[in-house]
Length: 190
Image 1 (cartoon, rainbow, N blue to C red):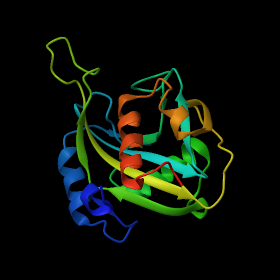
Image 2: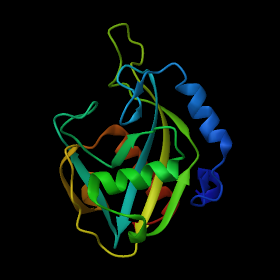
Image 3: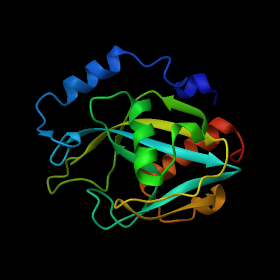
Image 4: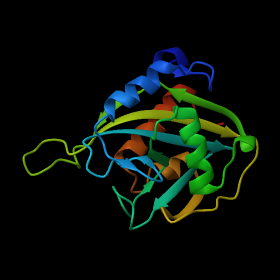
């Protein structure tokens, strides 16, 4: 699958007003949070970013803590809910906040087009999806290995070879995103 087929867009340059307008419309009636901007606590439709961070053939995984809103105590990728900002800015903030990676550490950052993701694990008692994830997948390749520094959201973070990563108890979306990255690369991570 080529970059074009997957919907990859270069960092920053192709982001536009349409993304912010879509986000404003999606969250227009959501409560606002003084720190995080948008309160997604009870929202069905959630805008999120998810990032595969790669260096030297390994990916950075985080072991989510017990106090995160969804999927506590599982392995996953760096991710976060979107305030009223463009995906590239959101993921740069999430990387710095969750694992101590900064823009200066990143050689390339690629953002895929938004996609709707439904998780069968998150259905309510009526069988309806309790969450619909509007996800911007992002892919960061670092200049050099960075020792991750975690915050309250994650118990630990570690660099893992891709084949080992796929054997861990991953969030369903993390597994799908890693497999998508492998399809794009056509081979193990570089």
